Amino acid sequence: MERVTLKEYEAAKAAVLYGKEYEEISDMENNVIHKRYVDKVENKPANEEKEELSESRQKVIKRMYKLVYWFADEMLKYEDMEEQEKAEFERKSKEEPDKQIIMVSTSGNNARVMKDCMREARDAAEFLRDRENDIEEWQITGINAMCDQCNVEKIIPYDLPTAIKGLLCMHILCKPLCIEAYKIG
Image 1 (cartoon, rainbow, N blue to C red):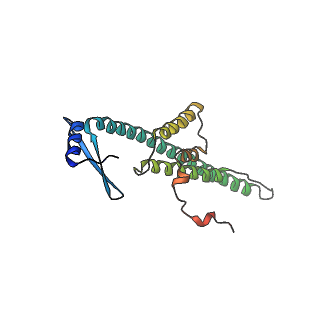
Image 2: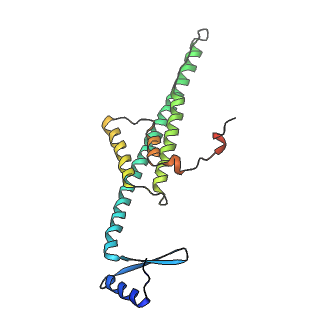
Image 3: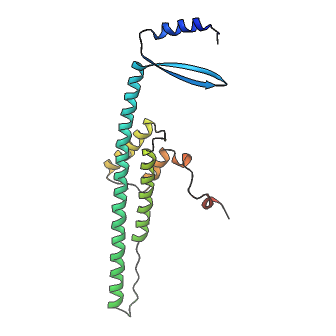
């Protein structure tokens, strides 16, 4: 780094910034002030790009909330199915009290699985909504690609929210709510 006088510095600064509007940004490192000058005209396209990224982020957030709704609807269907199965079992048991009747149902467990999926999709949507989280365009593109493939195949895998959380690196960035659950014995 070359040392210059204040007069030389002002002359060099004027030569670079002549006729331009700029924003001065100062940073301090090791008790030394470092100044940067950002051309407002060149900075404007960068801000417009951020707005576009924000728009694509909003679209993926809406998709995530639609996913939450889908899992909620599925959960309610399974809960209703479980109630119907229980009622049918009780009706048959009363009709034929001497006969052994066995009921095998997965509806209750499926409802719990849907609830977990709904919770994970909601967590991903909230993570995306939080402006503090740095979400890159490739991550948004990846989420959209997963959702688009689900539309093509006309299925929604139950591990989709977990895959989305993995793509967002939430398992690394977010602390678990209960550390005690991870301790062994």
